[in-house]
Image (cartoon, rainbow, N blue to C red; front, top):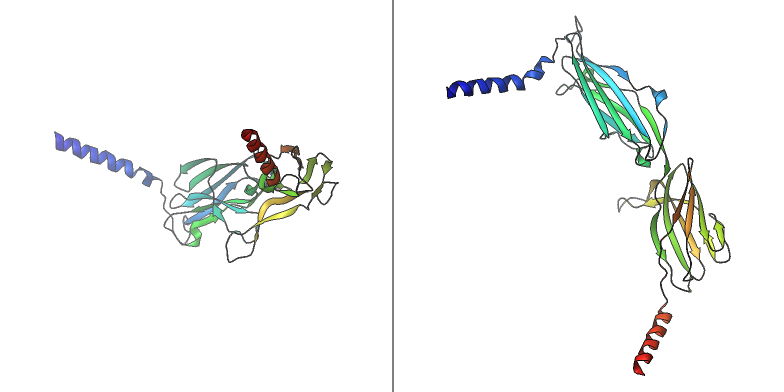
Length: 281
C-alpha cells in the first residue's frame, strides 16, 4: 500500500509542476500559419499621465502583450529626467498585478503597475518591456511607448551646517529640495530677507544648485532638484531665532530652523571664575 501511495504522490507533483506547460501554442518562424514573436497589444494612454503632487500623487500604468509560442515576462523600466546620460533600469511597482490568458492563436499577458510619487526623483520616463525567457532573437522582445511623469512639490529642509558663536559672526547653510525651483524667504528679527538681499545684521546668499562629490576622481555633480541657501549673521545673539518659508508651484511650506547658539569662551571663563569665587568665600 505504501509504494502505491508514493507513486500517486509523485504523479500529483509531476502534474502540478507541468501545469503551466499548457500555456503554450504552436507557431512557425516563417510566419505561416502562425508567426512566432511578441507584440504590444494595449498600453496606458499618454494623455492620462502628466504632473503629480509629491507624496499624494499615484500613477496607474498598464500594458499588455500577445506572444507565441510562450507567455512573456514583463518588466517595468524607469529613466530619470534629471540626467541626459541616465540609463534605463528596472524599478519595483508599489503595487503590481498580472493576468495571463492562454489561447491557441495567442497568449496574452497584461500587467498593471501603481507608482506612488514619494520622491521628486521619481520624475522621469517609464515603459514596460516584454520578453520570452530563453529566446534571444529580436522578435521575442517588445516595448510599450514611453510615459513621461513629472513630480512637483517641496521636500523637508535639511541642515547642512551651522556656525553660531555668541557675539561673533555666524552662518547657517541649508539644503532645499523642490520641483520646480522654489522661492526662499528667511524670517529674522530684522524681517523677511530673500536671496541676494541683506539687512543690518543678516544677509542671504543666492539660491544655487546643490553639488556633491560622488566619485573622488570625478568632478562635482549636481544633486537633482536640490539647492543651497545660506544666512550670514553679524554678531550672533542668544535670542536669535530663524524660520524659513518656501514657495513652490502648489503650496507654501513654513519651517523653523532648529540651531543652537554657542556661548563664547570668554563668557564661559567668567562664569567659571564667579563659581570659584563663590566657593572660595
